[in-house]
Figure (cartoon, one colour):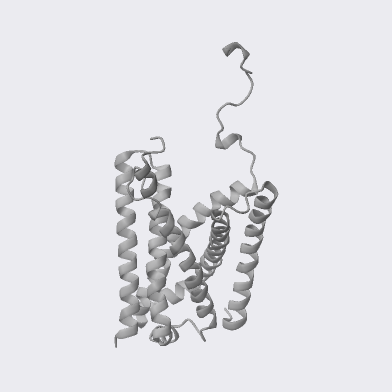
Length: 126
Length: 134
């Protein structure tokens, strides 16, 4: 590999052709998670109760529904990036690695879709 | 040349011959807690949200389990896992700036992560018990 050409070094994309994008988005979502999850935990503690009515009343407000949607995107994005590294480090069989990465992507996207749908249904629905 | 090589020294490090350190423990536990949050935390979070969106019956099922002994146990465990991952993640972000790699400083920040996670877990459950009861 060496240091590559001058142009290659400037672009900084390496052999995977994606540079530090994965590493950077892991940090971006980490910082977002700190803010959003602290808001989430504090909000739940401050709710009068965690019964169905209290949760619906809370999530129907835009000030709760919008951060919840952001939280879902950030958390499922972050866990997808994080567990991808885990798989790449510990699953050495190429076939198993491919299947694990596929399953992880499906889980992350399906989870984010299901969570977002639930929030939207509560916030917008009857 | 080969004859000069010392014989009895370990030449290939292996997990089982490392002495446990706070710094390695915090790193390993960061991965373990991340995995637990990604799947355990993620699935329980989705169960809660989907139950709330599905209606009173589905929510009642979740609520009964969550307030039962197993639910409380999982809740306490998961909140410690969350705080541990949060604090070791903040330590990672700090070290991403190139700071905190001195042996003494890296060790004390690792110890602080363990102590802080337990402290925050206790504080959270004191807050939950004092505002919500059991």
